[in-house]
Length: 263
Image (cartoon, rainbow, N blue to C red; front, side, top):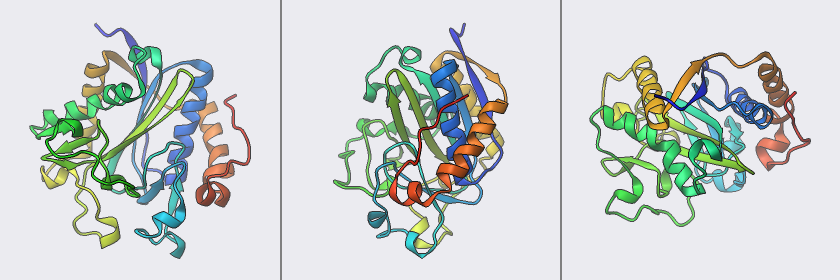
């Protein structure tokens, strides 16, 4: 029997700025209400997200950000990732929900449901550290797919998606990417990375969502309580979107103009 409940949210496709605003609103709300949550969501239009501490000048070597390319800065660290035809997830919980694991072991715990889902599709999915090759494949990666961390997930030795985490005291926020549709027909600068359709031609979003939810419930030993973001969370997300995730000071320079709190 499951030992605890997680709020379970599935969002309609949203812009990058709105998705990041909702993620942060859920994180800020957890700081006060302590209700763990997992959210699955989609991106429209496709967008490049950059890590909290990345320099735009470095990313411009690969993506034409200075030429008007659409991007948004995340509240998590890590490297730039192009979100296209994928399912993303975000999780907010406490260290207690994970058994007070270390930073690196919490990554393993929180990505275990993605690994389980991939293997339920009969794919050869493993953590990067289980592969024979050196998983740290780039000394100074700028794009997510240029490097492999210990508990990144690979299929047939090729990295799929990515994950990033933020910790504050005993609170853990993690989000990640499950690419669905192939990127083979995109222009060169956007084709980085592999997607599930490269292995399974007819995979659908509906079946993937169901499988991911089942894997999360099993791996985390939790019940999922389907719900919508609260009115306060929507209100806070709208405020964060306007004041932070649409601002040049945040997206280009990583500068927050104020401290944000949940009501």
